[in-house]
Image (cartoon, rainbow, N blue to C red):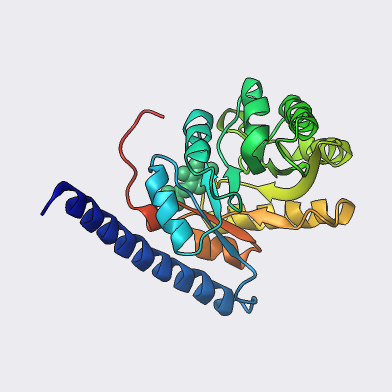
Length: 249
Ligand SMILES: *Cc1c(COP(=O)(O)O)cnc(C)c1O
């Protein structure tokens, strides 16, 4: 084979692999919805493409995916630029975010899932307003509040006590739109009880903020449990993309 034939064969093989994984995953989501009497289609798949190249995002786009989750600002910003000719992609920032990256992320993110402090919310609001002003975005930045389910602030996420205040702050911010909640269950916890707690917090949030309907919960290993407890979007990396390369990040 020539070099270009080899590349084509590699792209075809990766396309077949991703298409197969996507099929299995959509089947899992569908089955999880049916098992608890939820409308299939009430849960979206957010492919998490961190550590994987823009070429994989392009393949998934070809397979119909339009939303992608990234967790590292630099990597994401580069990927967004590479895929710039596909303006209907919605990019989600799902990882921990430093305040000094808020302005950059506000240029490309449709939604940030990991807002857990007043200071970060303030920085994102400023960044989003500047991006709106500069014509870099046309809508406010959608924000999900990340809640800590073990109340350990080291691992990210707002504590239950801080949640109401943070929700009111985001709801009042002109550059932001309060979309809902996100959580990652504690490593050592049983996911059912963690997701049940999250569902209770979401119900409480909805009482004061009825449009904050998004619940970002569930990953490769626990999406069935998250769907049972009301998840509206599952963030899936490994089960779709394969194992991530070992890195320190
Ligand atoms: C990497 C990541 C995921 C995906 O996890 P998998 O177990 O690979 O599906 C989900 N959420 C966040 C915040 C992540 O960083």
